[in-house]
Image (cartoon, rainbow, N blue to C red; front, side, top):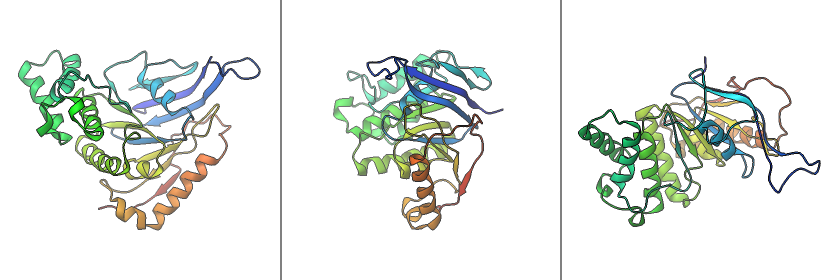
Length: 280
């Protein structure tokens, strides 16, 4: 049994943009996905393809029109701390310090812990994202990259079963984004948390993920076949870029993203294209 499973999920919205026929505008169609525990999965798609809608469905923030989403065999019904979410926009409380923002998440989900245990857990995850020296600072005193580190620390400190990441680095400059990608790779190696990350960056997905799923263009986007990256973690961006396998994987990803949607109903549990890339 898959740890996290999406079965036949479709979602439409009644917006100003109703289709010409008058029916609701389809965003996602027949999404099938099975994710193993401790797996790092990236879903890659163009802007507007429905990536945020998909992560919101898994988070329980919205409900599917059809199909179901299961975590450990149990249907997802609404938001729950077992599914932590890291958004693009940090979502930090500006009047609270780094420590207080992370501690707030711990306090919300771990009421059984003593005050000392909550403090220790908070400090552990702040140090994990290399912000130990900034624990007393408020968000306005931090750079964008540091704020996103706080958001990641809070998500991890809540100890969710699945960490959902909605393009967490897309608002950052290229150098900061590259640094945080490497930090996330290191953190995942240490924590082995099950991660589902949404991105429009193919290279980011190849660097981080065990398995990548392309999301076709909408309306009515669906998942293409799985593409596995069979290389040891952590990976080196410099070495990856020199590997012929890496270049083939990029071509496979681009081809999958520009191709039309699938017409079948089979679940995407296979690891269709396995590519071995360089490791450190």
